[in-house]
Amino acid sequence: MNYQAFKLSKYPQGKITMDIFDQVSLPMPALKEGEFLVKQTHMSLDPAMRTWLQERDDSYMPPVQIGEVMRSYGVGEVVESLNPRFPAGSRVVGVTGWSEYVLGNEEMAVIDPSVSAEAVLSIFYITGLTAYAGLMKIGMPKKGETLVVTGAAGSVGSLVGQLAKAEGLRVVGITGSDEKCKWLVDELGFDAAINYKSDNLEAQLNAAAPNGVDIFYENTGGPIQEIIFNQLNRFGRVIVCGVIADYDNAIPAKGPSWVDINLKSLRVQGFIATDYLEISDEAVSVLGNYLAQGKIQYKTHTVEGFESLPEGLMMLFKGENTGKFVVKF
Image (cartoon, rainbow, N blue to C red; front, side):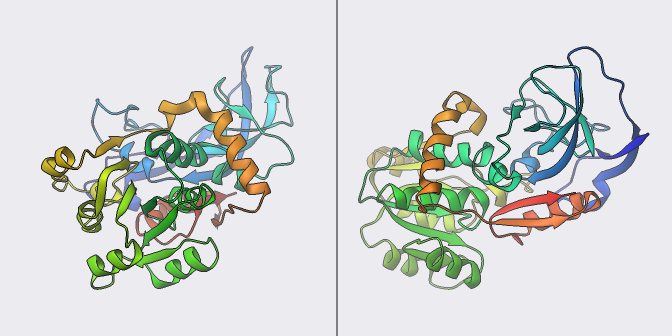
């Protein structure tokens, strides 16, 4: 019996295209002692995947190699096991790959049967840890402060904004359409939202954040970055979670003013969620409580079918999703 997988055939030059992946048929592995086999059911598409396709050896994780199965996060069911910690029939989440079946690993976590795969990928795994660690441990929010978050309608950004609101902050979201702005304000409770494709961005941000910006949660980069940075208050914090607008560029855009960093006593810190694995239980507890109280919610953009993975990844980088992008098969 064989199963389907997508392997990387070449690194992207600029934007991701369909031809960098090859769909292949692989033989089902025979299990050795301690191993278990997972049939994937849900896979997460994330901006970090673009960084895994960069040929650099100084990143937090080595790049996917040519000829390797594309890396991803996924949820699946254990269908065969020689490992008592992961019995057949249990559901797991972890680092997997673009394949219908994967050999499990000890870093995977068994999922509570009452929690949906969508909730796990949207809140109770890397996405939730990213939002929580960045805002709470680096941003150190204080009630009454103003937060601006870019990529606000994405999986991390939408969660960051809701968590900040639950913590008593004024929240301004930056996103790419009027429809998404309406969702952020009307459904998620953001105080204001700005379409970065519209005009008079500086004036719009002044109106949305009349007391200036205390915390800037950066997910995207792009021209809006400088406008937000210039409106930071003294002792402001910049949390650099991602710069999706720069991932396709050979030369990144110029950074912010070091003079302002100095004279405003700003703190600018980049981070990777996996640096904060030790607080995973704390993040799950806090986010779970807010979810139960109705203070946060999640939305998934679901695409059906294993074959849709490459196209789905291209859709993600075009900003065509609202909430967490999940491929179900």
